Image (cartoon, rainbow, N blue to C red; front, side):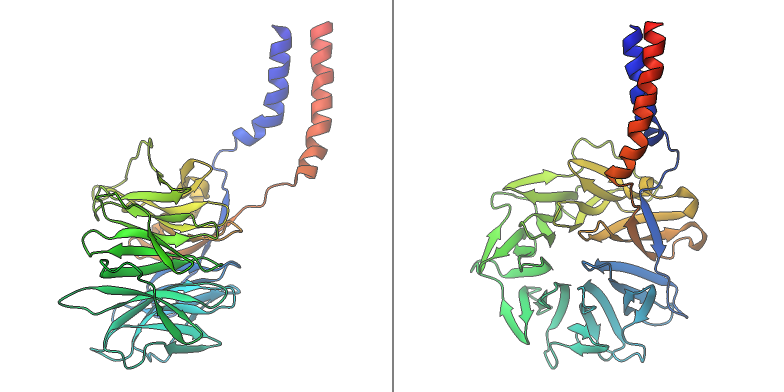
Length: 375
């Protein structure tokens, strides 16, 4: 009995300090701020090296796409030409895609921002178009929308000035692409407007990820292994955050006792981002529950940041291979005005450092325990 207590002391001394750090944060939080004259910011895309894009809004005018780089947030159309823009995807070169409106009443058009220039990639087209994702090759995915009365959409890949129609399924008139991996895999949704399913586009073929499913679904992000983060179900409390992996559909919140805060808050699950390590981010409630899913465990990101910051994370939209996360939420002092945040994992000690501390502590503890046991 004495030996068991002694070994328990060893484990407690070595592991106790890790387990009892009240309020410990696993992420540093950077508020990306807003340009002068703006009140709202929404972060939507993150690159492999931590650049962020999204959009900001003014009370009296339409939104503006931004690029966050080197600690500064840049308005991508400071002269208000076009009059409206939103950024959704960014790569490590600082190229951004999203959509813009050139003049009042004109259709929304996909754009690319590169080397300080914002360019409409569908000039003169009467259809609306939306850029959604871009990889480090400069490949852009998104969709055209013919609008009323059909509402049919056509998913596209834009590369080197050329558009490719991604739809390879004749009886699927509705197709939208949302995410592209670094090696060119694409995801989105395909089918009809009411019953579209998440797809994976690879080697020229579009594969339905839930061919027998009766619920609508969508893929928002895909990694180089073909794992897809998305959502399933109608746009209400039945919406679930989903991971498509190895031919299986994983409900990320399965078994989670979910408590959504606030009288207007309700369950609403969507997975928006995934990295090459299979870490997934998204939301589980309409607010207050940005999550990270890693190795089968889902956690509220609000529990992993310093509470003294007064930050509330509602939705996480992307994660890169360094574990950096772009999220949207609020600060307590701004109330309901949205803010964009960059979360960076806090560095942990290297194993060699832990060994320098742990081994002497272990040796000392064993000596103490031997003395107490054999005295």
